[in-house]
Length: 471
Image (cartoon, rainbow, N blue to C red; front, top):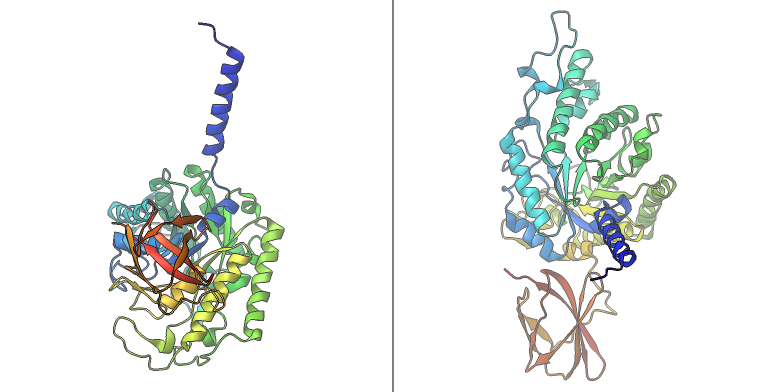
């Protein structure tokens, strides 16, 4: 047998090259495009102990989030109560000199096991998951000298500050080590809203040494960073302004910001805020301007943007777990819906990804009602970008589909003659359906949200949202 070695060598080369291409990690830009529209698992693992503020998370949460059409789940977490305490460690000598080290602090293995279980649930549903060190205010507030105009008891200097920094390093070492072999669809977020307590230089320094820890075991994992000293849309603009900016050349970082302005509207269920309407041209122009600043910064730096939180209080301040109306009112519903729609679409139009804030039905900003596994449908739909304009979304009065959610067969009722039925996923991919005797057998499709377009013999159309959910 005679081999053509030149052809054989070329084939091997192409095969190896193909493997190398597929092995390349997702760039931040690719990851942001993949993340798309997401949601926060708020008030769950970020409580002092899971279950304090919301029911403990179950795998069904991620089933429901994925079926709805979300692509990303941000998982806010608090490590404080599960890590060796500062008061349990001897870190200074009799003269007050620092003698401690990072090795004095350990994160409970059982807690890391639980975080791994939760993030594995998310990843197994095809979601991007974010480990967000969110509730560890003990660390960033140790930089805040005054609070409310008076001395902050949590403020630390000298050996106490060094100990707090080593404890925070230990937390990120534990995270980085435990999750180093996970899918690239697991992202790390270093700190949450530290800018309320830390200035730009302090955040830059922290980003630098934590990123170095992460890179020792996760060289190509995408990491989310934010700046210090200024909040909301101005926060990412503070990255590197202290002069400590070498970490901005890292090839796998994404910048983040949160947006809850105007607070008079987004927090209007509270006693001192009372703007219940939103949506004027001036309201939207403010969003355009603020998001525009972030977009300009992003384009200049070559660092993509992730809108980590946004949202407005529940309409009339409703507590969905009890049904009680808020004591101080709250946004009127159309304004709340439009606020969520406009911010979500603005982020996507600018090339950002996002995770809308949601903390369950016991909280003041609700989209997913964990108690009965239902949604605040109008808000969910606009955040997902699936609400069609009235000129495009006019279901015929005598046309109906059921069940919805559906598994394999869809039933239809109508007095009209159907010309064709088309099903689209959220990426615009088309599936043509065949209908017989007002029954439709669906093709083999992934769980999620789809748009069903039915065209009748008179060329009128009906558009319906269809959820496919197979056990």
